[in-house]
Figure 1: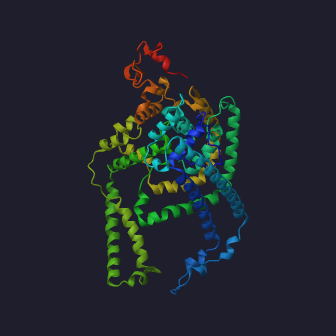
Figure 2 (figure 1 turned 135 degrees about the horizontal axis):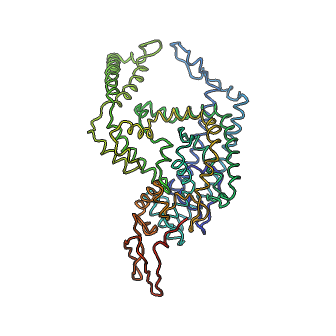
Figure 3 (figure 1 turned 90 degrees about the horizontal axis):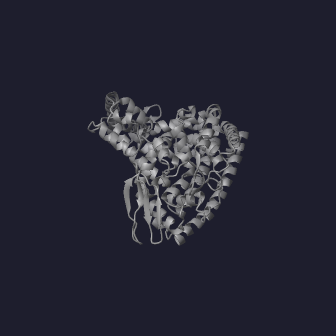
Length: 552
């Protein structure tokens, strides 16, 4: 949900209820209202400008060499190591980077201005038409908001299913790639934020028009689409190579600023685990909106942590106990010394120019990390915790049946690595990004493009093309694709009111029975029922259940 870095002023068509309009309504809900949405845009821009400014200041004005080599015991001001006049002494490469960055900032400012106008209009829709205030957004669920949208616009083709289809058009394509093209060499590499952005920019964005719909001419102009993708790959590879040094330094500084204080105050966070970006795309269901997906993955994260604790390493445990005892004893000695004489804290050097305070800070961090590898008090029951994980994510039956196997545990935890691993992966894979773009994605571009084109199909109630794997109205399609089947089941569980829309579930169908004017009762019958009678005051209609299942 971060694609509003683009200069898009269009709100979308509220009459046709097109993809962009619904996406804007959901994006407004996802960010919990107008004030928070605009404030996030401004703060994100400020953080980026501040980081670049700080990077230039540190590299141009601060004399690191003299600062590191300073050995005098006398007090000295930090100003002695700063030369502000050197701030503007840029080399040609930095000048080019700054010019491009200024251009980017200018575009972002225009984008924020466009967002202010656009979402002010969306705010009026929420308040005047849907009767939902900004305060209400903090308490209302999306189901409640979507029901208000469906009720107000009264469009016969608008329901919770088509609404999700339109909002998730772009994301469904990415989910398909990571679900169906796992044998590609591209899928063997770790997925970083930079590589993800490059992939979406080159392969997905050319399919999407200004209304956030897939153009119907895409299937016809296959060669044009492939040519556009290859051109984008060439251009973006060159840009990645040219700005790799700047991007790498920027990324390192950003990580230090973002995580440095957290790791310093709580070193245990370094070994905390979180989902990898590739795992998130592989585990996401079709038509699963971001707020539901984030909630599900958070619950799955807690469950998978408990499962991982069922496999404590005795080697780690033994080494951890030794390190804790050895380092802890030194820490206690230093602590006792400082209690006896507090002047020793900063005036007594353990090694050259390294006082007690410096060593206590380092030792405290090591102790916190080593304790995290200690023994846990969990009762050994992998099956119990694997079943908890299975409640939230789709797992292979082989993994579930062999949950006591260490290799299964390692495969599962690979999707949920330690945060430090992800940060290091983000850095070294950034250097590999140009190689992946040119020597991997470029060679596999035709395969990926053909796949994306071939999975596109139409829907009788949705404009444009859609990913056929995301359709829940084709019985054969659902049964033939395990990911689609799981997505369909999860969608029904999330939106119970959608059951009657699909007319089938576990080889059964739901249909309206004879009722009075004010109520409609839904009864379950077998799918092979010969006919369905729908009676009204004016006429009686006889149809077959199979006529209600659309085939593509």
